[in-house]
Image (spheres, rainbow, N blue to C red):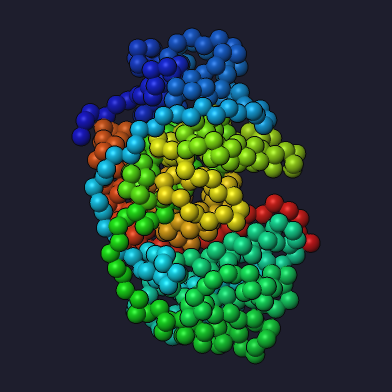
Length: 495
């Protein structure tokens, strides 16, 4: 390992440096004398910056100075603000992208499903169509697990509860139904019981009739109001599903069969320096291998969107990215909310100042290869390579959206740390080694060692090894601690 660097200047065009460890007033850093203490992950000026002058990081504008700033002075929300405002006009300036190089083949062991898809888990799920039966769904799972104990042949039995499915109208109602239907057909599920109440507007007959093609040997439906003891009936239906799924075996397939979601949450000043660029390199590796990655969190593309647009594979894809970005801004404006009410307090405490600062770090997860497609509500993943997915930055909603789009697992980078996990394996990657050491019950992989001198190449190899292990059945921390939650995106009224 190389000697740990104390600071970094990401691009030669930058007007700021970033502290990789806590720095003291009077120290010399990147050729300037620090005018005050600088916390890890925070920025300091490399030269004098005048009021109104643009501040540069990642070689891009991250805001404007709101006061005169001296060389060596701390740059944060007290003396810098966003430059962003409203919807914008964009132009297509396609960037030439070198063809992806050949990469070493990798094999994963997966479950093949009847429709040709593959899964990395063989679980039984109980999915409520409405929040009114959440307790019954949990009771059915508990009774079934008590009866069978270890459940040989499957990777567990779980339910994913939510508060919706009734008193919703319009797009909210349709989105709830659509997301739950995507869960029902997710290939990580070896068998699913769909549980309804009977009087909700997410009616079981409509749900089933609009589900499309599904494996009838692996899908059961139960309406609680139509039976006497819904717990006993639910256990009986799980018995049938268990018999159908318990003999499934893993088979070897190339890693290109995987669909991997990309997400960050609780970001800090090192996110765009360690974990996010590492995940970007993994995304490029997957593209070169013929696999699929998906980036979401549209509000955290604001300020970095032109860089993604310049990587659109063609003009049609560019137009879809424009619709993705301006459509989400219009969603904010429709609700009379500021478009750029971001970063969060935790982000700011970690050194992120403006949305541009956050977005330029966030989009490092996308790597450097072409954007091959953009997915909106109801779209299926069909293109190999990097995809963009419509959705908010909220961790639980974003991971639910990624999994419902078909992702087998999610790579989730974090600087502040979070125990959260979705309904697919959620690999938590720390941006700094401190949180990895303090929270081994949250973190699966430490990318913070890059700040201490480890190379991206060595950590990419280790991260790819971990993805293969997880695909082969190794549990993530969220799975071991049974942190499995969903959150359905809601935009409308509740009756």
